[in-house]
Length: 271
Length: 316
Image (cartoon, rainbow over all chains, first blue to last red; front, side):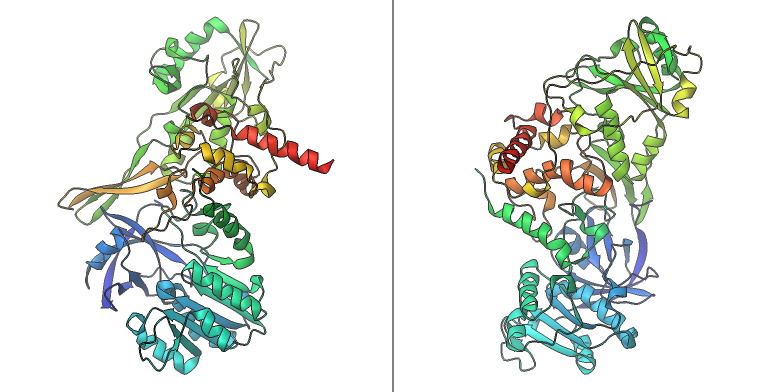
């Protein structure tokens, strides 16, 4: 049945900071990069989470403590059972990325879907051109997946942008779009993909536009409230598109007019 | 070919159906609604029901899963073969709309088990505008009252089997609907930013009555409940309303449709524009229930008509 989650065993739990934990779960669900799951805490509820790895035998859940379900999820330890249904969504448009240069941008825990894409790129390196990666975090304490980032630094051009540098020498100070403005990346034959808070994605997109990347070369991985995850409950509708079924990754020129419509009417407060 | 039955033989026809099926029909109790009947005399066809037919297919709250310790079991609804009798054309078209979206197993189970019998409505009121919504013939059987008889149109084999024993009609009778209310030009996709919507949204209380009584509003919530020891619990699906702020709220507190205006427009545009983009039919079936139920008498059909009028003037 579509609502029935299946049990999987937690293989490993790593506490990254007081807000974020990384759960490694044994599973053969093998999601495409950018797809997501509904994590079930029986008696508490469900929440949508993206896998942050691309591996046929495991899924990694980079989880930020945000609500009731994640609070319950955080209690689980190695060897416990977690119920999952999925994968859902279409994920990243891998076919369209072939032989292109990529700019990947992730903000905070928006890192998760982008990481699954980086994994995929590592496994199929010859399919892609230059890879430039930007990560945005609050401060050095909030840098996620430090070991992995260290590895990626050897393979790709990685820039970490921190709101507050606090003496960290390997990172740059400022929001991602500010850092990008100071040292503009090459945008020829390039596609940009990003995930993070919408306000961050918006300013980064504007900067990329200035650097010559048009909206049809930019993809957003989006977040909305989801209950069913297969386009029935209507919760994730942005005008006429379902984030769960049609996304969660959208080409920006497709989603832009819809977002702008809702945004402008959100600004007008009636009585 | 239509079948024919005398109007005063209808009760006998229905009494026979009640023996083999659960028959759901409009009744008048404290409110008008669809309900399982035991006697055909309970049926009330004079006015459109306040509570829509969807409540039978999508109950207000429904059990999906039961938890015990770490075991999860599915709960399937138990339904007898059912006949819906006396649904209006708008009610039936609403089921067609729901069929397009709902892939929920409980919904589909009920649909498979159901035969739809429609009745021509002789009393459309001042809120009805079904004529404007391009409704189709969607039924297993449909009754047209004419000259002391019901002329029965057959829409499916399931329906045909129920009226096999009845004589065939010599001539075909179908009746047209007459509404006083009309929506003239429904092409409002480009008018999303028009400030005219603010007038309606200003009156809106976000009470969600429109979505409760709408026969095609199907959005839902999945909720969990558990005993205090957390050893037993259940997961239910219950109806949700896009008119409430909590509808789009995510963990962390951000509500994506934050203003009343954006929520109100979401309702109207979903019914008239968004659904049509995807499924080629209007989600609104013109039953007028939202207009009847609105405590502040918001009439968005009027607003759409004003929009098309101003467009005409601008063209001139």
